[in-house]
Amino acid sequence: MARFIVAIFATLLAISPCYSQGYNIFWGDSITSGDLPSGGYALNPASYPWIFSLLRKRHVRCYAIGGQRTEDQGDRIFTLQASGAGSNSQFLMFGTNDRLARLDDAAHVALFKSALASETYWLATNSQSMASNPSGWTFSGSWTAAGSPYGIGKYTATQNDTITIPFTGNNFYLGYLAVDSNSGSPAVGTFTVTIDGGAPASVNETPVALIKTDSSPGSSMRAYMPQLYKKTDLASGSHTAVIKVTSSGLPTFIEWAGAGSNGVDTYLLTQLPAYLPNSYQSLSWTNPSDQGVGAYNAAVAAIVSEAQEEGITNINLADVSSWINTATDMSTDGVHALSRGQHVVATALNAIVP
Image 1 (tube, rainbow, N blue to C red):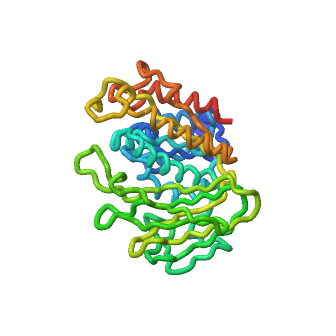
Image 2: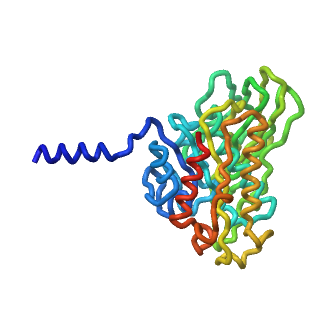
Image 3: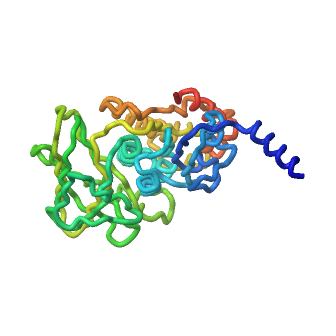
């Protein structure tokens, strides 16, 4: 019996793929999880992350959860993966649930873009969290570690409190929150950012009503809306950024900051094309012909092109929408990929990742 067990084990080793060290991380919704509840390491074997891992012979971690919008995974992206430490590449596919809930008007597309950009820049650059109390940063006033679900940030409700951040480079990036709760007083405070004593830029004046807008009956306020402030094209060399709270009595949440140095390779995946007709035809789309997919995908492409222009060359685009044949690869529900479509995405993604 012992020999038999040893023989079986040896056979399994022989036929199993030899996986290299490291892992790839996937973030998204049910399209990425394979339409199964996930949120951890569990994967649907028919999903494109699983197939991709077999093609790459590299382990995968999938944090995708069905039904989630970009902001719903903000706290997970910031806290579960500290700037992607230990991973080889990271992949994000968001926007489907954003557009189905908020439709495709320009203001909501811009909200989506800023949220995804904040998450992407955090994952792709060697930025630092407020809660880590980076060396040389000065917190003046009553800044307090925010804790869950704002695990990497600090907040204050006191006017004129400041954070002083020295940095070196041509660009400055700041992650913050535009909403902080599901009920009560959802608004957050406002602040300014001043670079090297120049003119202060006012930040965080996103209307709460814009964030709350939802085509689903009974939808609640989103609890966590990451946004991105950036100042680019600075002169090379050392600079100082000062964040100053301008409101009083409202919590101001600041999550992270950095100068945009390249970190882990990060890929933004466009949405799947909409299979038409579907049950979302009656919604008030700005562009009914594609139900907003084009507008959201243009926002994703813009994040990548802007990052590349700013010197963050490890943020890349994966144009999934161009790989999919809606007639053969898409479900008639209008948004999900069939097994064939999942294979198409995995194979094409494998071809563009070095």
